[in-house]
Image 1 (cartoon, helix red, strand yellow):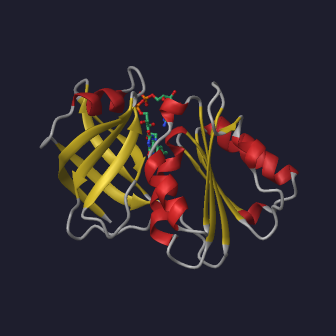
Image 2: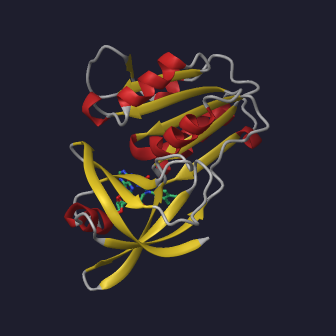
Length: 223
Ligand SMILES: Cc1cc2nc3c(=O)[nH]c(=O)nc-3n(C[C@H](O)[C@H](O)[C@H](O)COP(=O)(O)OP(=O)(O)OC[C@H]3O[C@@H](n4cnc5c(N)ncnc54)[C@H](O)[C@@H]3O)c2cc1C
């Protein structure tokens, strides 16, 4: 585990309220796809900490996160104002939200920025011998994160199925809540759910009701 001050290399809005921040990666920093870091920041005169899933794979040379800007959120305000070369202390890695490499088939279910750890896992494991499906829910088309990159991975890899779904407007793709788009056959699959508390609880319950054994469900809650 490391605790180190790192500089912001760049900031980029992926859509109107999701910000990708690229940090320098400390040389000795190692992590598994799916893990998160804590970031310490100063706001209103005191130090605080928030957790962020790591967006990019361990072989990449930077450390990228992706955060939804919450109006008046403490970390959100700090990152909104942050500039290139500003320094933040990162601590980590943490978490057990990782691919169960003993299983062959994996279904990732997210809403909003809950997709972040899955992008990392998919990029890392898609070339290996796993079957993976991502069901990513968003309110509107403009909220989708890393859409082109995920579509390209799907086109280039038969073992990956990408299912973005939209709840609040018409578009050319899947509509409605993620639960509507679960695979018909739920057996012999690992399920991973990531997002806000109510979504995670509700989705887990619906899988349990459909007969999925709890040991095949992993969850990560953002609040
Ligand atoms: C393990 C873990 C990993 C996380 N990874 C990410 C990540 O990759 N990207 C990310 O954006 N957030 C992530 N979060 C949430 C993050 O830590 C902060 O809670 C979030 O950025 C809000 O912080 P804030 O200080 O701006 O808002 P606060 O002042 O703390 O206000 C928090 C409010 O925002 C809500 N909220 C928290 N997270 C979100 C979200 N993602 N979308 C919508 N509402 C939210 C809370 O329910 C609460 O109402 C993660 C949390 C955990 C525990």
